[in-house]
Length: 263
Ligand code: 48F
Image (tube, rainbow, N blue to C red; front, side, top):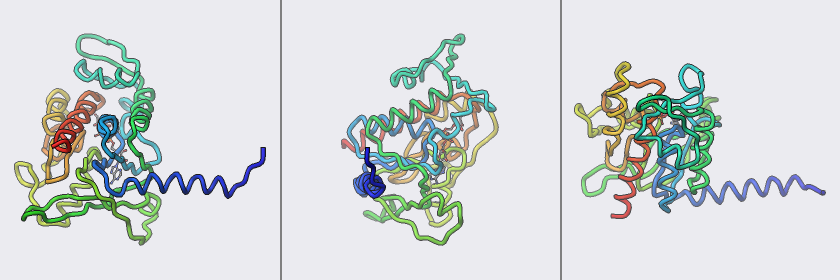
């Protein structure tokens, strides 16, 4: 079999830039490829929306690979089991409301399901800022500012590029990076009690899990928070290695945004 290295390069360039170009005007941009972001990406893409997910690291999955303290089993509660079994992840009943799944099977399958549903995934890509526009006197997020992660990691002075999105989901986990940048750079008020990021509190799994879903909402026009970023934004607790709230948060943000997009 003859192989031409230039054709291999051409195939990569054409495939990648086709994917990139079709992401210039997104319905939904998702920052962060943890369990909440991946679940939202799958459901929105399956609904037919133009969705892209941006993940800083090479691998998707965020904090789910390692279960608890690298013991790679995850625990979920009954209400969220369907978000694993719907995509074929084997789940075992432990006792009462507690179910377990293999963390690696869960992570890889959630990632695969999002891609196969049609979500465009850009790994090794960091979201470093948002685009703000004033519409009828109200400031709104209308896009994202992205850069290659190796550029960011090397601290190179290279300007980013911009993509448009009707809605942005911040699913960056504990650090709430996108919102941190938004409030640092702009005189804006968030939809939180203080108008700022409330910050995360210590461990209280039961309350945190419930609040993860309650706190999943539009925190600023055009910008939703999901997963641990929702709790960090609204001042709730951390929950440690139980993942049902993350999955349910992804499901809720997808349903809320789908309803808005459908008008
Ligand atoms: O932290 P992460 O898994 O988010 P999550 O969906 O789930 C949280 C749980 O894993 C766990 C927990 C449950 O007890 O609390 O922590 O809320 O994944 C967040 C992903 O976002 C990426 C980061 O690399 C990680 O994979 N990320 C963070 N900031 C950026 C980013 C950024 N600016 N641009 C792109 N990706």
